[in-house]
Image (cartoon, rainbow, N blue to C red; front, side, top):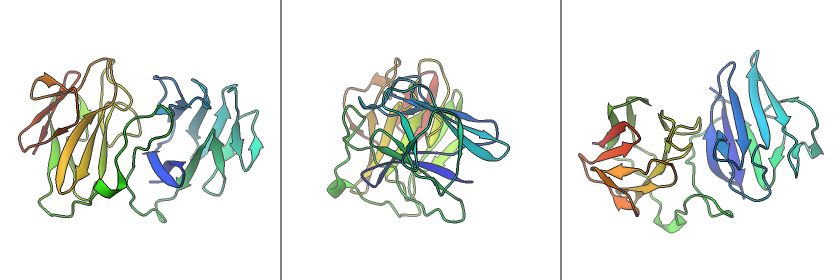
Length: 224
């Protein structure tokens, strides 16, 4: 399946895939499927759709515009992997399945956004016994997610999340699991319902241990 990458300074900060009939809203507002928390991006900036196997990009009367191949678009336009798409400082790149090489999504420190993971502290977890996240209660997909080889795992209800947790009070990006020095850490990002660990609401990044239960809305996920 083809995958969209949201790029900033040549780094992937978000990614998502789409299926036939899907619509992805892009903007600065909390209701956006792809949230770009930067003043150059309008709350409801653009919309990406997949129809009849093709992608279409529409600018939603944004203040600073949506650009394809250097031209500001004023209507819905078809876009492909060959096109250069820019919204504010961000680039949207479509990687086809045949060409895609696995790369982690790294939250970065652009103005107003989520979480910073210092490069020197990141490490790849290659052990075949790497932990996984298992859904033990509630509505979340997939039921199990291996953390092997993953530096950053995104949890929330947005289409870009590695593990999607469904519910009205859950943020598009609710929290992160970060691999660092052979260990895993849980970091809350947003959401009306704060992320909890073993029944206690999170106030700061916390190291995960086998058997820990992560609470997001009405769902419970076990780190095992």
